[in-house]
Image (cartoon, rainbow, N blue to C red; front, top):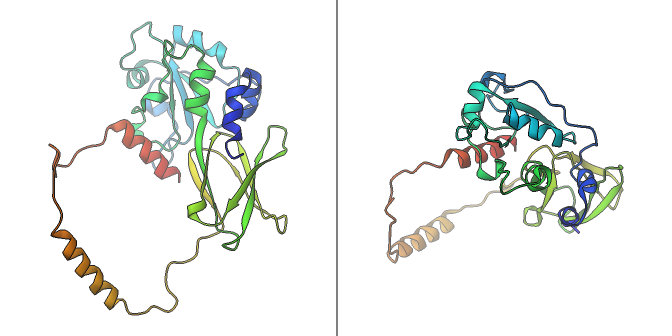
Length: 275
C-alpha cells in the first residue's frame, strides 16, 4: 500500500497523471523572460525561494509552452535569455531546446549546477510531461516518522486525494527504524491520524524532498547518569587491540582532500537546508 501512488502512475493515462501529481487542469502561468541571476527569487539566506522551470526563450519556448497544460505546485515558469541563458544552458546552440528544473533551497552561487536528471533531453524524452517533468521535477522522496504514540503503537497514514478523500496507506509504527519512505509529488497532502482517538496528529503538504516527524523523539540525556569509567576503559582497550590488526590500503587520492562536483553539492545543500 505505501507505494500505491507510484504504482498508479505507471498504469494510468495522461489525465489521471494530472490528478496524481496534485496539479489542477489550469494551464501553467508562464511569467516574464529572465535575463539575469538578479531576476531569480532568493530569500534572505541567498537560497532559492521557489522551484523553477526554465527553458531558452525563442523557438524553444514556442515549442514547450503549448505543452504546459498544468499548474505546477509552488513552481515559477520562465523562459531565459542573455546572461541567464548562458548560465543555465551553456552548451545549447542558438537552435537548441532544453529545460531545467531547479530545486527550492538551492544556494545562489550553485543555482546553475544541476544534476543530469534535472535537465530535459528531447531526444531521450519525447514526451515532455511524462518523460521529464513528472518523474524528475515533480516527483520527490517523502519520509515520515512517528514519535507521537507509545512504542507499541502506530498512526494511520493517509494520502489526501485530489477530491479531498483519505486514501489509506498503512500503519506508521513508532520510531526512526520504522520511518516510511514513499515516492510522492509536490503538492500532495498526507495526514497522520491516531487510530485510538481519531485525532489528526499532523497534516503535511509536500513542498520538497523531506523527512518529517509526528511528535518529538525521547531525550537521549540520562536522567540518572552513572559512571562510564569501566565502559570507557574497555572501549579504549578494544580499540587499541583492533588497531594492531588494521591493514591499510589507499586509492591514488590517499588523504588528499577531494572536491564534490558542484551539482552533487548543490543537491545535498538544498536537501539539508530545506529539512
